[in-house]
Length: 528
Image (cartoon, rainbow, N blue to C red; front, top):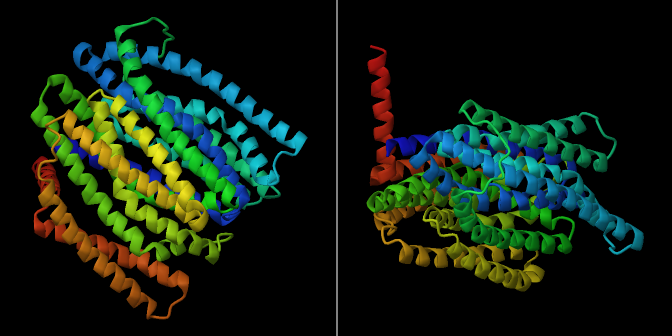
């Protein structure tokens, strides 16, 4: 188990660099372009290659690949696992080339038709989004194969390389934004095309570095179209999984399309608020899932149900212990966080005011997003991809219904509320079905853990509310107050939360303490 914790720490630290750079990238993007039609068009266009990334990359295919590849590695060794990888990469690569060509052609054709027949009134926003999407389509090829390489690296316990993949996209985008800010490009339209070029460059890095890491593990790519039993097993898991992932991605596209039709700012505001929520979600919760999922898959091969239950419960406690304080912090300190991070350049005070209610809703839904991801991956570890599909379809219908009910009276906040309510339904349905399918997934120790987390979170929230109120009494400028809150109050809240969990005897903190003490003793002994 200490090894499990060590891997989670490695992934979290590696992911931290990517998430921090992602925040820097978004800060620069909104400072340069604001929250208007140009940034909304870029975000909407970026949704398209990401849709296929979720379908053919880190979503459905990775979830199906990890159990099959883990079994092949455990039973037949690394050479057989790499041979199976070649079969997968060959097929997926060919499909991706076709999708890039067809997708770019459809987008350029749509733009031409809209131009020729003047089909839309808001031509600038819609047409720019279509053109950017066509130019960005090759990114889909890079990121989907990169996700497959990363899944294989995770199985080989090379978590850091895979976790750093997001860094390289941010490197490309930040470089492009810097070039535009320092004078390359005469207007916003040229600047947004330069940013799109940065995405393609970052995607090339995302593809190349995991590819090189796998080569260092001994993998050599060779085209292989030969059928095999392992490919049949992969298809059996992938087909239901891709249907479920398709539902999720269609859900996302529908939500952004509805936001795109509300006004110029809705897509940008939803994206920004969601990015802030994704910071703790991706840095910690997804790190836990990334490490736990391959471990569950391997334990399933050995048939050790008791160990599976322990690993599942431990991951569940860690996810709640991480996401609940993050949820509290984002909800109560949303104003200083937005002001400190994004209150620059073209992103005005009004944009912050519009984003605050959306972030408030997303913040409270953060633990739900983490639980939905974790439980869906637990099904995949059990080689059941059908149950999450059924739940995903019901969630999609609920989200569309809630969106149509809330979007016009509440705008972007209504779409955020629809997402939160539909995710709550998803978590309830997944939890019930998961416990029916695998009796060992009972969540041992959850009552005590939930009590400990709740007490610590209440203490933290009290400090956040009182502290922010006290900073307001100082009469400082908005930026200085926000800086004091982010750099002083938030670390204090984290310290109070951690201290409370420590005093209450939170199991995972005690295990982490034991791990650190053992490592320190080994280092001291090694140094004499």
